[in-house]
Image (cartoon, rainbow, N blue to C red; front, side, top):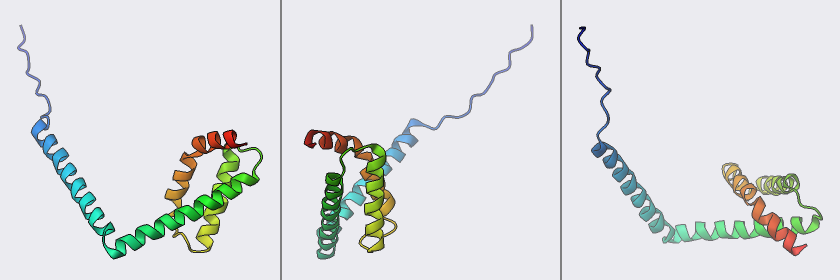
Length: 122
């Protein structure tokens, strides 16, 4: 009878190492949160936060005005409106080029919610 060879399995990372990495990630995230909160409470951070809120309110007003001009809102039409607004804000330098993709993604992700509100108003 031939002898059975023992097949060695690849070594698994210990669960302790995984837990250590997760804990380190949580600690780093918490530290970043504390640093961000601290920065936003400084005069410079408060000014930056105020400017961001002001930009968001202006963008919301313009988006609402454009939506009010629209009789039939489709996803494509909504995308066109968002593109138009972001092009305007990019051209006027009120938004930096690095902010545009994130804002665009956020606004487009809100289409379902906007469409529901649009239907209830119209």
